[in-house]
Length: 141
Image 1 (cartoon, rainbow, N blue to C red):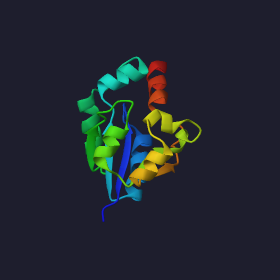
Image 2 (image 1 turned 60 degrees about the horizontal axis):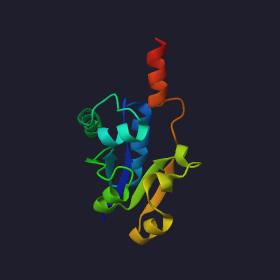
Image 3 (image 1 turned 45 degrees about the vertical axis):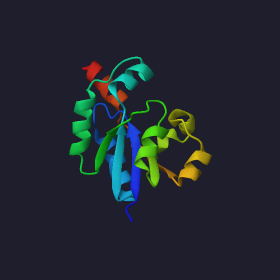
């Protein structure tokens, strides 16, 4: 039986932290599916669009050997739509979410996860690298 891993995000300015995170996802399951935020949702959520377009970010993710499939996050703030279509065994997120309300962010509850038979796994966050840090480095030059 194939164990499907779901993760989602923006993945703008693809970097080593993203690779490390996706490697950890790959080590948990047999198939890693990334629900990629659309340009429109990012603009709505963050107040500005990503540096890379959806197509560019999708291509970068598809080229990563730890990613099996990339799908658009069709539900925006309601991730249950994409998750319901994928039907993963696990949702994997970074430990940087451990002290934030990931459930509210994604639009689901523990009861919903239990009813869907989906496990939620936190993996270690890669310190010292992020899209924000990369943007700061670029502006400092």
